[in-house]
Length: 261
Image (cartoon, rainbow, N blue to C red; front, side):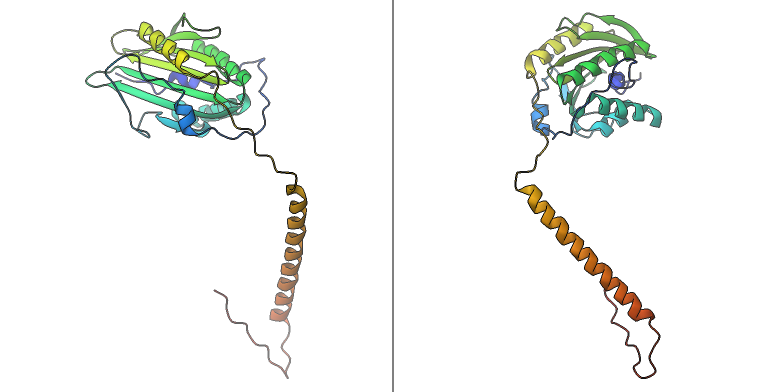
């Protein structure tokens, strides 16, 4: 039995022709606690959560590089994911991963935070197209959520995934429910409905830090001071070189400077 490491590579693996990159300015990152608070607990009983950093799990906060390493198996794929996340305005993400003791049942939920709602919606649309082209794609199904949400089934080596992707504000959520008995689509729908109701309307992304009014004059002073210091240092270096290489006078032998630590 093979458990795939996140079919969520489809979320950002390719850029669909005709979809322009989202232009965003640099933004601060919301705290991991804030992002985690947007991810719901399992609606089913009996699930145990992986420890943060567990092998084969995307449990905990992640950045674009961590996400790309998790969902892509080669350098080219990771590069595609990173570029797409950058184009869509990805800011940060958080994953939670559960399993049932004594069985192969699996539940995974991730949230990807973008700078704005357009970035989240673009990523979701791209992921649908990518899933349809995937090697393990089986079919789409009704996610029974908001507009733009969709469900998809994937199968590999006797293991079955039912995945639901939806957006809420500037955030994109993906629910993955896996089983070795059949496609757990009903369970994934129930989890997605709980996740949708639980999630905030958006996760606030702090704006970039902007310098205060008095910063620029002070910056000019600092720059001028730095230039003066650099000039003095250059002069000192030039003098030092001159002294070291000056021919010795027969009347006044050169004195070597003490070595500096």
